[in-house]
Image (cartoon, rainbow, N blue to C red; front, side, top):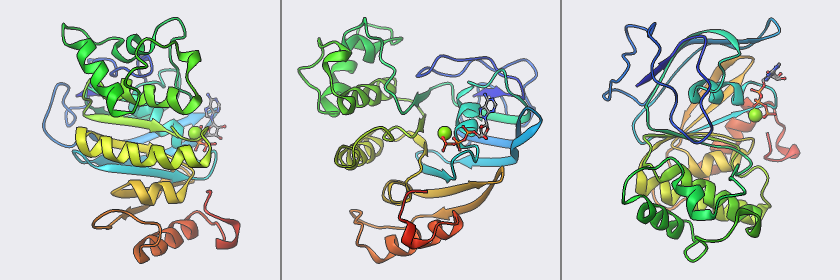
Length: 272
Ligand SMILES: Nc1ncnc2c1ncn2[C@@H]1O[C@H](COP(=O)(O)OP(=O)(O)OP(=O)(O)O)[C@@H](O)[C@H]1O
Ligand SMILES: [Mg+2]
């Protein structure tokens, strides 16, 4: 486990967080591979003296898919960045333990424009099997045959598929995703939902997906959290056996409960 305290070492996007600092909390042991992949204790983050995360506790179990909802500005990205070890410059306290094998995806694919698609996917992956792994992940996201394309020859949705392939190529124990489909059109987004769910069922990382979209949260996650006023105010288990459908009566009920928690009137629609 990489264990972060209030001040963190900046880690490039898409790679594992920095090794544990020497002042790791005794209850969150660096290098520990047992226990839940995500353990957060008393996490507080402030910007200009304003508290954005207020004493947040969170555990995410092995293979669990968690969606994080909250109004714009509620601190979702701040929490994700703390987990990713990307908030070294932010004022705060608390303990964060995540696996060394953690991948991060953002709304923009963040591909290197001077590297071909396959090279982007296997970036940072060592060993003779790396190219094979990269090709396999590209095939899984429907991009077999595009290995030698340049990123700017791909559509936005295709670039995001490459980002997903890159995130999964190292078989991470934890996948952190900050609105990965936020910039895509509605149809592409629905296709990406199916793809992400299928890939997560196959590769089994624990997932924390930040989203504005209540339907996205309910259709994808095993558990939905709502962040409000710096605290996790809702922790809802999603129980939908079998293939997920928008028409399932439980979906309608979960959606209503979450919209109410977000203070959204049904007539205003599903976007939080
Ligand atoms: N680097 C920063 N400097 C100052 N304030 C910041 C910084 N980053 C975030 N904030 C503030 O912290 C609050 C939470 O921001 P954050 O980006 O975590 O929200 P969010 O829930 O992800 O919102 P959105 O849904 O719009 O992406 C906001 O009020 C934001 O203005
Ligand atoms: Mg955000």
